[in-house]
Amino acid sequence: MHEMALCEELVQAIQAEAGSQGFSRVHAVWLEVGALAAVECDAMRFNFDIITKGTLAEDARLDIMEVDGTAWCMPCATAVKLRRFGDPCPRCEGYQLRVLDGKQIKIRQLEVT
Ligand SMILES: [Zn+2]
Figure (cartoon, rainbow, N blue to C red):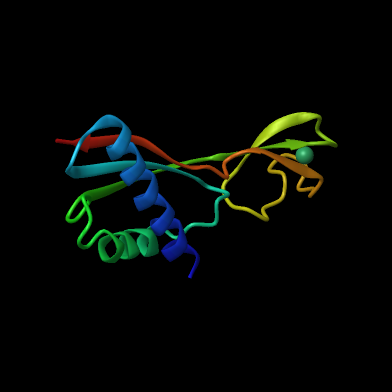
């Protein structure tokens, strides 16, 4: 399960932050997820609750902010917004697209003590 592995990476990243910034509890995590990252937000929350058990982020709230993807359409010669990976260009309905942005999964902010 893709989301399970992502949550494990997320917890490792939080633990690394805790090590460098010196906090010991995480109460909330704001996560930025690109629309093209192919992440199920519900599955992400479900796995997050399981994986954070017994860690410094146990019972932390996971807030997921979905951001639109952006791709460069070659026939249109412009950047277009994409809601999902595999969607065609919204202007010309072509598939000659190169993804520019929207595959990221990154921590925006942590609420810690
Ligand atoms: Zn196009």
